[in-house]
Length: 447
Image (cartoon, rainbow, N blue to C red; front, side):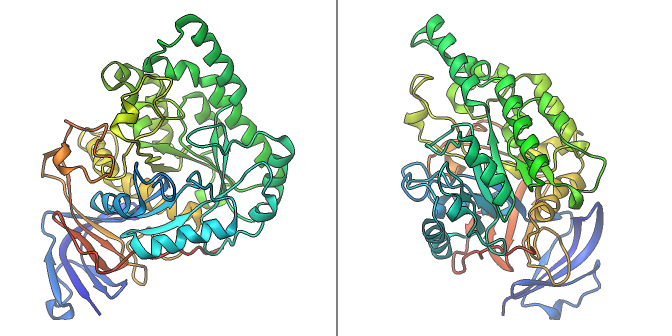
């Protein structure tokens, strides 16, 4: 059994920061005690945490690692390593791979592949389509994070636009339903208007006008109506507009909510003014919109209308992104830089360290009912991230770990650095060095 003692470290956990010693034995947190109170003989390796901060590992509830079928963009092995280097110890991956994960057999093949190559802990969403309700209802709530519905087309061809299928999924799903919400008819009508005006010269800055506020709100509000009607457990992904934030409650505890929401890093960081310099490299679905939307989303996070922060990590190659707007796919890589991006907001005085831990770890674990993860607690899996808040570095081609080789943060200097990442008690990342001798684990759920 490997054992580590992290001594005299500032532990960021459950709404407070305290100087502690943390003892890790095998996969679990054995003891959390006051600083300098655990004997150094208790562990094989002692880590001096003086001046550093220890966070629970981030849990990203929305990533696209592109395997199987799209591995020229990314793969489980490469993207999970990038995640671990960024302090993300667990992820939930989406079903719009090739083939789409629309059967239990295809879903389990992804789990098998992750068990062989993923450095981070993992779960995979079951895909919902117009005609696979028989497969959806077989989903095991104990070992699958949720069912994903594309209520708007994005990368791939998984649009669910049949009203009977939607009713059946919201009625019969045995598990949390996660939705991509954009109204397809509205988007198509907007696109036709821009084609008539600009022909082949539609620009990235038109993206939030095509995939508009109206398209987002119409679909999100419809999802809320369906969930309310059927008492479904609904989680709406990547909220991108100020108007949508009014769909969600903050007057009850998270554990009592039947409808929850996610904000993504790119919607908190960028706005429509950035299309002029970033172009297709910040083309996402739903689109990055106005500065006022960005600020409203951030406020909704702070006010607990939006419950969790994730990435929608969705890599494409540079060549794909350099195509004209109409041909360039939507999405981009973020999972290596999500935690340091949120820490940058801390440096700017916009959010506390405790809230970052809440939104990237605690609330995700609570929202999905993840077993023994998301908190620094005795008896929980040791998913831990040691952070130096006073070590600046600049994102460049040389330190990007995504298979696609680029980041929308290139040239940005962050003021915090991830030093060590433990995944289920395994020191998987240590100041730029990976130990791949152990893989991550399949997440389980208390349902």
